[in-house]
Amino acid sequence: MKKVYLDNASTTQIHPEVILEMTRVLTEDYGNPSSTHSFGRNAKSILELSRKSIAKLLNASAQEIIFTSCGTEANNWILRSAVKDLKIKRIISSKIEHHAVLNTIQALQNEFDIQVDYVAIKPNGEIDITNLVDLLSQDTKTLVSLMHVNNETGTVLDLDLVGRICKQHNALFHSDTVQSVGKVEIDLQSLSIDFLVASAHKFHGPKGIGFAFIKKNSGLQPLFFGGEQEKGLRPGTEAIHQIAGLAKALELSYLNLEIAKMQISELKGYLITQLEVAFPAFEINGNQNGFYTILNVKLPFTEDKTAMILFHLDMKGIAVSRGSACQSGSIKPSHVLAEMLSAEDLRKPSLRISFSHFNTKADVDSFVEALKYM
Ligand code: PLP
Image 1 (cartoon, rainbow, N blue to C red):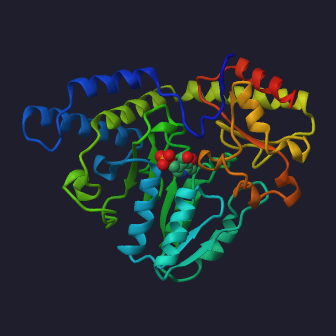
Image 2 (spheres, protein in one colour; image 1 turned 135 degrees about the vertical axis):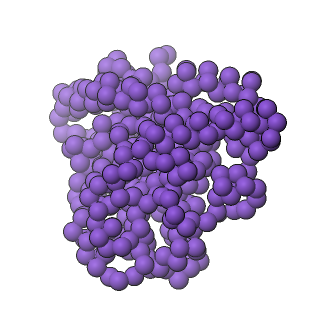
């Protein structure tokens, strides 16, 4: 059975060149970057060249890039230290954030005396900017935490606009950019953004490695304590092969960005056309012009199909998802779609199809064909 992987917002296939680079580093450059001998200096050089390369791709300075184990850690770190160390009294976020942000904010609200406000969501899944401006009129030390690309629906936040609004209101701005880094140009010199996070496994790199962009002089303090690695901000011996893999994956992503974007956008368009032919009553959840890698659709099937649809597709070798991977085993409806759909629509089967440049039209055909026999 030919397998079809259309769940690239959950994780991506690692690029063969990344595997080669990681294998080389694992084999040859096993020194500890904190050691002063040649093995250590070699590892240190890979570490710092990787940091420089990532910073260059995002137009940041190398010292602003701090490696973490994943996007979840980076989000936790930034939000917690903003409250604990930067004395943020209020967080403005949204109910459609990833749980790495939502649950962290909830934990902080329980632990510290902070105010949390959630921006209104428009029916198409976008953030209501007017409401954000209203919320920011309060004179409290605030951090705004809003994701760039929603991992379930692909709705996109205007980082430039929100950054400018936050600056006007003296609020710090954190964005969970896990779904967009490596998939769209991000210029951190021109954007007014204090913190962002990335995760290598979303752009054909390895799992277990990510980074945070921490704007210079932000005053952020570490989440936990140990050695001097990452300027003491993220102690623990650096995983050089992971970091080299991350840097390689990001370099390849940006090198091939325009071609990948064109190819994937075309595939997404092709899927929409094929769905229109096979299931004319299907609907797109979220913005019609959502991010090019993600499509979330409500299928015109009866409610009783909802529970088993993923299972049936999986039996045919097709991997898609109902929402974020961390929740896909759950029978609870998606917290993101719950903000946008009526109770009745929420019970109907919705699927998230997410692409990478490894996908083909044949993958789309197999998926649509399988849906016809649900
Ligand atoms: N934020 C978003 C938007 C995501 O899609 C994910 C991954 O599912 C995460 C955060 C968590 O990233 P990681 O898997 O690196 O912890």
